[in-house]
Length: 361
Ligand SMILES: Cc1cc2nc3c(=O)[nH]c(=O)nc-3n(C[C@H](O)[C@H](O)[C@H](O)COP(=O)(O)OP(=O)(O)OC[C@H]3O[C@@H](n4cnc5c(N)ncnc54)[C@H](O)[C@@H]3O)c2cc1C
Image (cartoon, rainbow, N blue to C red; front, side, top):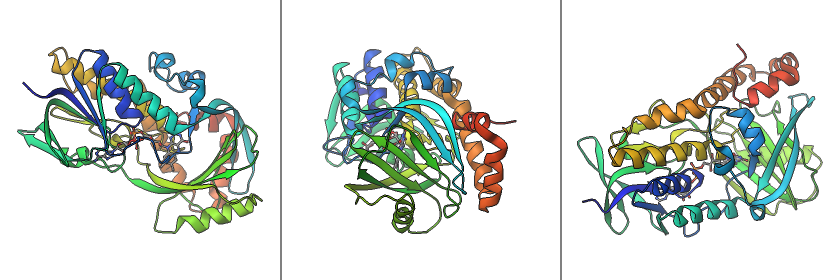
């Protein structure tokens, strides 16, 4: 008998949700994270669309109310409205409802739900890789021990070691840098596509005590001077309180997310809306699918491959659509003028569609 039915690597939104739902299905679950406190430091713009907005974006993902319920203590500010700025700073205002989160609190809340469901949650444990046998993971190797399992869920973020051990394809990653700046920024989210940043974008997410302003782009350029320049252009004089960054998957969902008894979810599987970089909600939807499928497969009631079909049915079109839009926008972004014309052509209705990961043709 194995030590656990399911080992989940990574206690971000994808992993904690996967562990919770696998445990709720009766599996013996171990959830591991290398950080002492998962979610700290925050490496996120902390924007989460409201459940209503998510229902519109992902109509085939069931039970979003229970899944993406955010306790009040994890909400920094309620957001109403989203403005998108073209390279020439032409503004397109869209209806939008969402929240800026206290992401560290939210991640802790999700890990607590996993623990309450019966998962054994261990932090400060780094996973080195998987012990493989005939195409399946036999065990997870940490710094200190080897723990056996009937299934492994890799929710260990963009640089996933589980993915590497399983030999699954890695997404394209773009580096990001972000400042948290004090002040009053209203309650409208801003997405900017400035000419100085072809193939990337800047976000401004208002918070109760300031805003997260961040930038993402490909290439080898140094990001901080670009963000400094952008912040200066916005006329912001306050100095950043916090500086953070990270890696964002921008190529859309992986072609394969299952190998043998190994399932990938969240950033590890590229399950991020590539056009705008939103990955918290989709990671949770896919985490739930991974946890429930792994528990069912270990109990002999499903196949591991069912996970692939399930997440694609729930959010696959939008994830692929968002990547499709991104690829086209990246081509148009060769010059500010073509991007400008694209936004003018799309107007509000088209922009709303592409934010939701809907193709235009
Ligand atoms: C700068 C930035 C801003 C962003 N802003 C937004 C936003 O505003 N809204 C939004 O929806 N999305 C945003 N995203 C994307 C979002 O943060 C991710 O899509 C989301 O966190 C994915 O969740 P996850 O659980 O897959 O991965 P993560 O949240 O990255 O969690 C992975 C966990 O795995 C652990 N881990 C990694 N390797 C190991 C190992 N070897 N052993 C043990 N544990 C390990 C890590 O410690 C971590 O806790 C942003 C991303 C970045 C980089």
